Image (cartoon, rainbow, N blue to C red; front, side, top):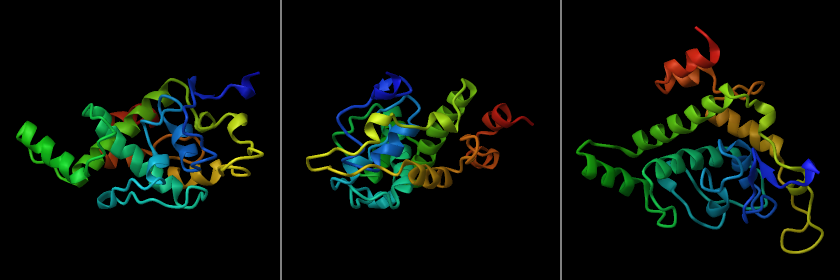
Length: 201
């Protein structure tokens, strides 16, 4: 029965079916808490919500092309939103978020610094899950959402998860064999302690 349980890492898949928005597949498969649409929302991007200042642009919702790259950017941005406890329905520009945070804290934040912070947050969660036993094999979707529907607006569409994972791993700087963030990726992000913990000295 496990193959018919619509979950990733124990969290059920919400209404955003990856057969309707193919790029959502890799977001669910790599989310640190399971099939969470708040950790990365390519489905919303493919409905037209764009953040061009951080290279998040919409595409064909039934195409796998470039979805791993867009998913990585979405995951970084939503890590910022989540850490600031911001409602994602607002979807304000990343520049406005940087300005608001700068005014609230008295420190100056740029768009680039926010996206780097988001990447650090997401990769640190990844390291934590890897220490708890996650592997590249954990980045999967249940069989039930990888089978095409026989009728309706998404009839016949299924995500090419392996293609999306390859793109996302490259975009994030993760090891294709283990799924771990590469040591050099973590060091570049200033996460030397996590690099040592995950890869040794």
